[in-house]
Length: 82
Image (cartoon, rainbow, N blue to C red; front, side, top):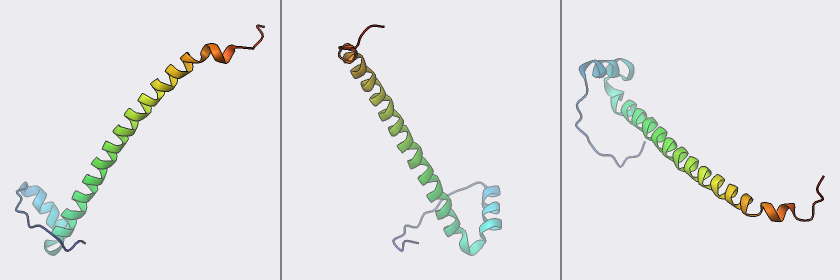
């Protein structure tokens, strides 16, 4: 764990604090919370990246479709009609 830390004072529901103590124990709460927050942040970053990639793929698909239409006539030049 990174030694450069910040002390936070947070408020959470009582039942959540009880569950935290049960699963993490009194001495390991900070580590448990850090891991949970890290997982959430990683998930949010992944979702953001997927959204950006999806937007990029859609833009590229539109551009590719427009280029294909533009060159459609040239693609058919020289082909015999059947």
